[in-house]
Image (cartoon, rainbow, N blue to C red; front, side, top):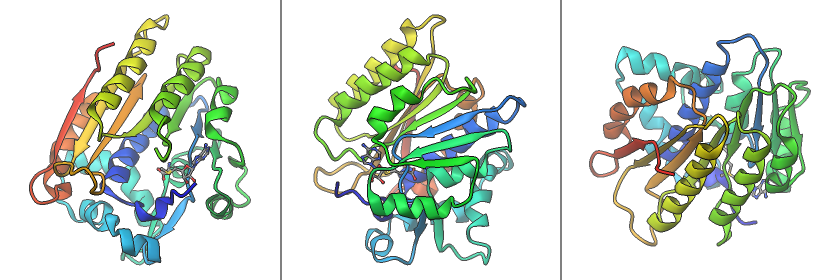
Amino acid sequence: MNYRHAFHAGSFADVIKHIVLARILTYLQDKPAAFRVIDTHAGAGLYDLDSDEARRGGEWLTGIARLLQARLSNESAALTKPYLDIVRAFNPKGELKIYPGSPLIARGLLRPQDRLVACELEPKARKALIDALRRDEQARVVDLDGWVALPAFVPPKERRGLVLIDPPFEAKDEFERLGEVFSAAFAKWPTGIYVIWYPAKNRRATDMLAQTVARLAAAAKPPGKCLRLEFSVAPQADSAALTSTGLLIVNPPYTLHGELKTILPELEIPLGQGGAARFRLEAPKP
Ligand code: SAM
């Protein structure tokens, strides 16, 4: 495993993913019933933006740093507030020094009755995450392969909640694996909310994944819904850094599509690199 999320922490792709994560958890908070977050590829939890990796990557400069400076409408400011409040809480002096990854953002949105379980295989990242969540009775970090753990972890006893599947896409077969593991988990828990991240580089692979996921969701009884979001900050050059990020959201809260239609157009200028960014938001065809 060579992947280190520290190079990408706070990038435009993290910003889009974490806005969606926070919107869904904010929705789940509306009802008092407990929910669980299962983060299959959790990362190190907290990222020092002064570290060598973060400096070399520098991706946070065109991601979270730009969002924090963007002038958003009142509506979008209110919708992104739960996410940005968590980022700000880790940077109490105002200067951006630390970026919280998905388990820390999820943790920030748990109520006392809610739980988080986070899988991380890479020992250093796992240790950092354990340290970040030390003595936290609501959050558990496990030394398990997220691909193997996910089907075993669902359905959670709360029968409400969200699964985040955010693999590093280092292996060639990661798209196929994603489809297979999602299929196994979804068969056991068709009413869960799933957020699947993918790099939007290879149109054929991403279309096939979206179709597989949408087909499985549509075949559930009652049929599940699926939303596909892609956000592109510049045209993709073959060997260059990723410029398009993708998310598939299965069983999204009914509010999410409208919220993203409000927020995403306002991110096109702040997150664009050498021009305005573009996004697509649609229900993929099964
Ligand atoms: N979800 C994190 C966030 O949004 O802040 C970023 C996670 S990063 C893209 C992927 C992480 O998965 C890396 O920290 C990597 O070490 C870990 N990883 C790779 N293969 C894994 C596996 N099979 N099971 C669990 N974790 C894995």
